[in-house]
Amino acid sequence: MAGAAQHPLPVVVLISGRGSNLKAIIEAIGDNALPIDIHAVISNRPNAAGIRIARAAGLKTIVVNHTCHADRAGFDAALQHIIDAFDPGLVVLAGFMRILTAGFVEHYRGRLINIHPSLLPEFPGLNTHQQVIDAGRPVTGATVHFVTPETDGGPAFLQVQVAVHEDDTAATLAERVLLQEHRLYPEAIRQVAEGRIVLENENTVTLDGIPLQAVPVLGNGQGPGT
Ligand code: GRF
Image (cartoon, rainbow, N blue to C red; front, side, top):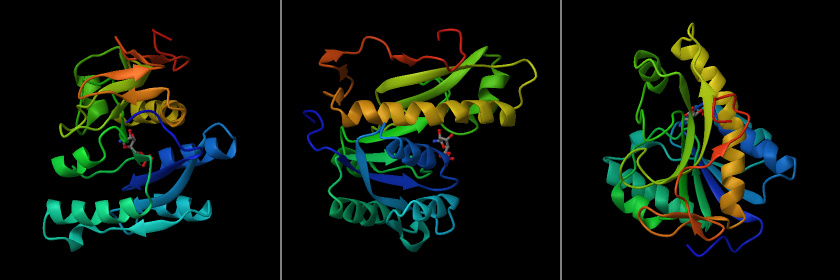
């Protein structure tokens, strides 16, 4: 992708549940802090709470129920067909809990991003916060990355750090990390929408045309590097 051309950038958001990151993105647009236009919010679960958040904001919502498709490839094909009707410059995974096929991911190469609640590459997958506590890590956080066929494995381009407290449970840690996700994701999306962050090839992300040597950290997450 040679930089985001359209302003505001047409975006499709995919959700599966609560939708708090979607809400943070909608609020950032409302604050004129995010030059994007959400053309549709798509959920694979008909009762996802995030659908109500989208509707309340006047956004178009669509359910593509994965249980109505025989297999992963069939679901992804249906999803791709619907997404492409909106011609998005960026597809944002915001708590979308489906593993996507390599063909789908390849189709959206450079315009498909995800947020994960750990400092990737550490602790990909599920039960992240308990894994962090069990491993005795003093710091965790969240990561925004381009999506590649490897789950939570694509090139990262913005992180936030959060200190782990001695008395943290997975729930208390998840709550503090989530608050920071709500700062992180709108900022990461803004950098993509402004054409500053670009996926150049499989592993290289550039910021303002310069390859990232390390993943930038968004300040004030209250982690040690901030
Ligand atoms: C967030 O923790 C996000 O990092 C992860 O799924 C959760 C989604 O939460 N991928 P919400 O639906 O945005 O509230």
